[in-house]
Length: 581
Image (cartoon, rainbow, N blue to C red):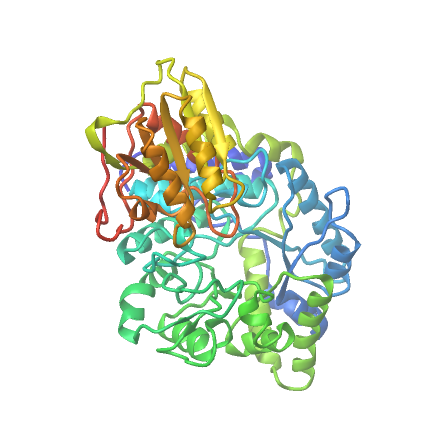
């Protein structure tokens, strides 16, 4: 690390966290998470009943009332089922998230053992992934891969951690350690840092260290790798056919690096790795979780499953049976993301298995000890409650927003620019027409902000425009001087989008295309003269990433793009390609 860079990341984190946490927490060593004074997992473990123990092994999604706060079912999950950790539903604002966290912590404290909760979130591209308003949108992992700067990866983690801690979150299900070797991967895509193992490993290691230093549990995922799959595990059971050598060479190194960097938690993949276990997905496989992750890689931390109500598990084994299978395989915490009844089933399945001898007391204690150790290590006992006002001040603050935009510009990749079509002249009164299939309005607003001339927009009703829709877009383009067309794919690009790009090109207007999801779209319309990749939109959750829209608009109108492709666009552009003005 060059002199001065550690102070930048640490200053960002400490300044933000200082607004939210008690003075004692501010004094902690930034290279290690805060530890509760005198916190002894074994002392708690010795006082716990079997029901309390298995409750600590289940992470439940919370449920809300009309006011956006946790409802009675959530209280019952915490107090009746003795749940030890939660993944929240999506509180709308930082202040609401903080009040939400405080309420569930009060309920947890009002139990016989008074154990705090570990509160988790899926903050892959910042806390905005779950808390939609008032937070800082950051580039997806593939954008950080395009930026090629470990310092920016650390800074993104530090910003995420500062906002998360201010809202009461301890546990982040990031970074994504998948190596996205399959361009048609329907679920990972831009969530991965890229297609090269060395790049993914480097950025994973940097983010794990940054999260730990900022007092947030990092969780590299999805072990042993979800990057070469053809099936979305939310919808089916993926399997990969590569051999053991490929697993060792391509997919395991980011996890090895994460463990060396001090990762305290790793998430499993609902993926069958045939070279190790042709029958069971990693989540349920002793050969993978105990054999490879524990014994071969030497991981001593906490193993958490991916959501057990995903079709890959629920439709093949049922969540109750799979819960016990996962613990037998080596998992410590079961993620239960369904209705209250699924939480009842998960806790009940573990308690029944313990009482029948299917799970031993020693095996259960091993997992509960890991849960309690993380609660001690990350200060959950000392810092149960947070300030909603501080959460509002920290999250989405102007300094974070400025840094996020700089990351976005560094990520934005100018892939093609024939005859210097870009940048467009921001000072010109020329009329800009924007066409696309998703997120057209927020992008158009960003273009409005970046340019002087009027901006009009059109959006298809679906991701596969019809001929009639394309004709309407062409008609609208005829009234403009220049055209921006955004395409979006989470796998193969729908044919209608490629026809839309070609039809707009045929108008004779200057046309630049932007891929706002996967960067491979140009393969379906290779004749376009200017092409930009932003990596801004994921497959499962098409969040409105205002940061990447703003960054793309600024690049289109003259700001120097910084990105280089973190993947290969087959037959067109190699890994590492990227143009500058």
